[in-house]
Length: 200
Image (tube, rainbow, N blue to C red):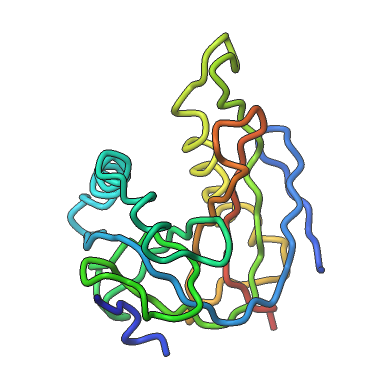
């Protein structure tokens, strides 16, 4: 079992994305523990996107989701996707996809553990996408959901921060949260948690 965070010991603002009005919620969230599976990758050599895509493919093929829930028996359903730099100067990072746990007693040696520090977050819910078999154009487009996620991230950093009154909190960790709302529904969504601090 490996820990990866060795160096990390109600208000609303509206935005529009693709014609859809999104209302991020500003919340304070206490620290929490995550355990699951992950990979080491690198931003500098351009392998990051490819590595993450391959990991998700292996995640499905190897049945890691079922193994994770069976072994860890988390108190709630939902997966956390989070990137953790190895150090503040490094371009290498660990991508972890796990569940929120109460302690680190149950993870197996092949799992990764992480304690996410308390933070203030702007929480964005992605625009709904129809992922049912009879969805848009009579079939589910497997690219629509990841595209909605990517566009939301892009909007947050290229547009929302400009007039939000907040800055990105570089001392904290951002993450994605996937729960039952992303299980091939006609209104498939997920949440993006972006750590923020008030502009001075």
